Length: 436
Image (cartoon, helix red, strand yellow):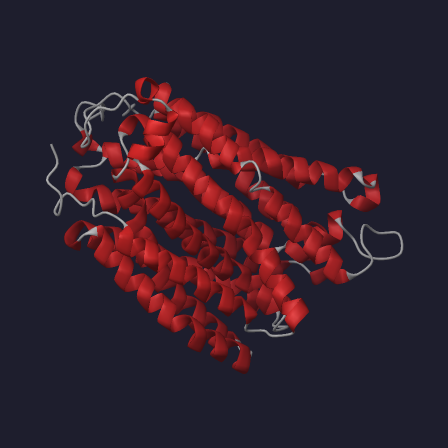
């Protein structure tokens, strides 16, 4: 079957792959950046008498700040590209965001170092991150809307969970690339150019991504599970008021989820800089995070189709909340690869079950004609405010307090916020809600 708009149950594996490849590339890039944050800092923000900063810690913080700069334009990208998807179509929006994303990753990979071109190096690096952030801001909304609109009603949770699963796929690939480079290159070569190789591998997906997205059937104009909705005639404030519950609960759930996601990604830097574990063991943490997160995300979407979105989110995120402190205590106390990998695996499973259930729940709660823009803007806003600041904040907390458990305290706080929002969220699963 070639016309998914005519018969949504005909969604094919290549359609799912086309929808989630951008999100996978996003997390591959950010995972890679997290792996090589120290090396990137040495390239663009070196420390020393003639460097960008005076201390190695200043170099790391400048690198993490550049990482955070990639989040600054996400809300703008969410509004612009999300609105484009709601007005023109999911496919053209997905093509635009993916093209911008890959070109910015390639640009970052080829920027010369501070030693070669001086202050122009960090300026160009930050500009590449800003362009990429704009593109990423408009990526998740249209693609999640596409998955929900194209999937059979009784499988919307499972198909939408591939957005969460794609993050884990990228962690697996990124972790494998990081471990391979760490085992192949000397530490000096890894810091000098290993990170550039990793970014160029991600940029190499451009032809494949554009090819499979170009053939996607459009879903914007097909019949939807919610009544028709005309945002232009209603006006902005009416749109916000009508969707206030979904927006507020979605923002809070995403805030807690993104802090947890980037905290687990940060475990590579944490293991290397704070626990002083070898690089190969540090890289393995995100590889484990990806492997366990992939299965857990899809399980969350599948279970959400069977038992409802809220129940699955609450149970798994509640268990995550309970497990955070004991596992961090074990990781910090034992300072071993086994404790690190076991802790990351358990937290990844509990986090990603709830994340897998969330994507479908949030997209289902929004009318089609504002689904792409609201989803993208809320997602990008939460990521910009909390995802972009998580890693620099955790590094700063450890540095200032000297308490290696300080990241766990912040993680507990934001997980509590997401749990409260989950209690307040509406149930959207077709099994629990009679749809027209």
